Length: 112
Image (cartoon, rainbow, N blue to C red; front, side, top):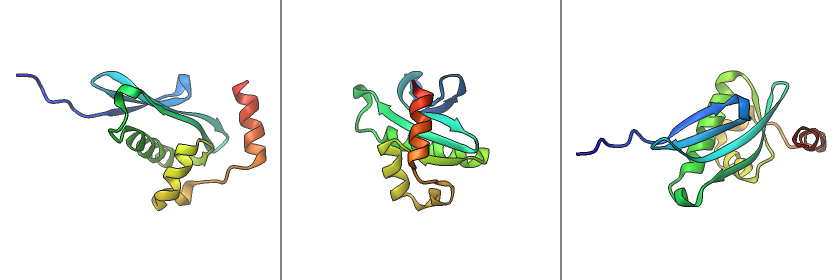
């Protein structure tokens, strides 16, 4: 008889500037960020095709944003998925900053 899965695990991987969601020890997806002072700028989210349709992206982003709140930082949702998530989840409105041209220029320089 096999052990039941403990469920997805979300880990912050600071060295790679991202949060990863693991299912049975396998990375199923990630949401990438860069820190800009007190802001955590999210710029990309993805879930592997093999894990699509399981609600993992929403779980990943929810736990990442909760971690941002717990760390005292603010969220800048450049990533379209994260932007849509915060629009639908008012509980993160108080820690969300707008995406500005200055932030976009800064992010482009960071990612080059």
